[in-house]
Amino acid sequence: MSQPPIRSVRILGIDPGLRRTGWGVVESEGNRLVYVACGSVEPKDTLPLAERLLAIHDGLTKVLAEHAPAEAAVEQTFVNKDGAATLKLGQARGVAMLVPAMHGLLVAEYAPNLVKKTVVGAGHADKTQIQMMLKILLPKAEPNSADAADALAIAITHAHHRVAAQRLKAVGA
Image 1 (cartoon, rainbow, N blue to C red):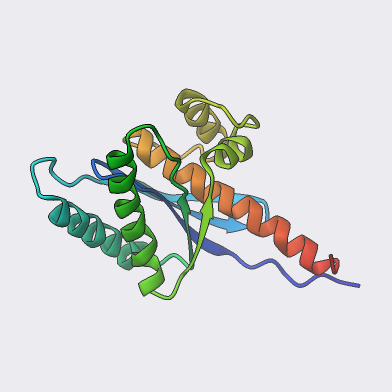
Image 2: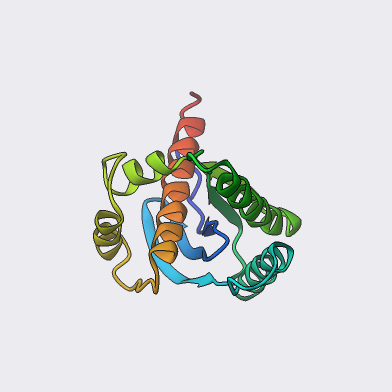
């Protein structure tokens, strides 16, 4: 029994934040990954919350128009001790999920520890370890911030998990 050919898919990873929302785009064909682009949307700290959220919306809309991803993945928010900060981050995350959904994209969500485990092999890896693995997995990538690097790691996580799901589906599991 032959397996259907694996098609290439462009994936947008998003690491939401009010100060800096990182984004990264990779092309995935089976286990093969190709770096496309990365960067961050950085609203001015002096803007009111609504305008910062609008800047994130506009920045991500521009990324979608320029890079035309087929799927998107967003990091899940972990709850920290500062409830107000968690709530604001949740608002940025809502915008980060809304923009690709408005463009008809599937939006997957991944916990931070799963992203680290997928990319580095350890669920409690630090940002330096993620950046080192990115140099191996995507040698042409040069993220300008830790947030852009995290966004690439989120895109890689989605690529790996979608391939695993396709393989399970192919064998009827």
